[in-house]
Image 1 (cartoon, helix red, strand yellow):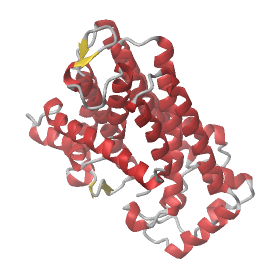
Image 2 (cartoon, one colour; image 1 turned 180 degrees about the vertical axis):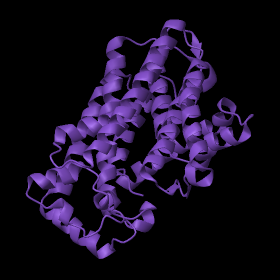
Image 3 (cartoon, one colour; image 1 turned 90 degrees about the vertical axis):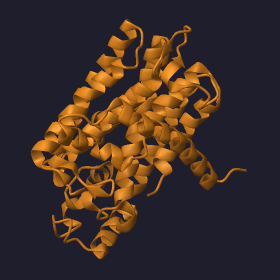
Image 4 (cartoon, one colour; image 1 turned 180 degrees about the horizontal axis):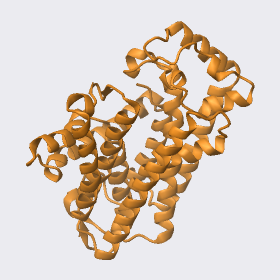
Length: 349
């Protein structure tokens, strides 16, 4: 029987192979040109790394729909369901460019110094350049999606999905900011926020190949639902990791979300159990909190059942997402998408 560790390594290897192809395509789709400083800043986080999970979802979905052996086709001339061709790699780069735009603006809003192990864009360059770099990536994503060279009606639908995704990400970010000054956030409100801030880009990544390849509406809807479910599960698991993974592995202070009064499914649940969440740590300064304080806070949240509750909800969402994959042919890429759903809620750092 295959061990969980072996399954995770197989998923990571599948992601790595697609990540390398996406990394090679990014300079082609987003070259550094005049004004050089703007485009260097725009490329900065993209060149710094990243797992490329969203492009992997997009490419794997295309492979599953085409019922082809993974990595056996040139993504630049990928077959549609009616015998035409389109550039699946351009679509994959487009969603990663959107992801990078959101990270730049998130770091500015949160005044974070680091991202992906390097200084944030506004720290490496300056605030004005970082804002422009994020805006440039936002607009470039639409240009790159057009480079997918799909049938006109499919291209328009894909652009509509991408625009709606960007709008909902901004709405989700606004809700997240609002929640920081509220105590009565419900689990349903939290799930709505993470759906918009995080999950919609996974949903777009999953459904865009179906749109560009000419799949039926039911297939498009099911794949969008898969992305929403696994994207929400991903964010919930991220909230768990923020409390349970050592700071040196996280690359930031463990429990920073708790210190900064970020609303998570864990804290929302804990308040309903009567836990004084704001009293779990004595400081709102991430640099001042001690590991002992975080250990005590985590113990309280575990006793309240809040961490277990969040992990259980993440599993439910991942399983529901996997069930939606029944619209795809049974093949290796289909299996990879199911394994990715599991990886998103089982991964560590």
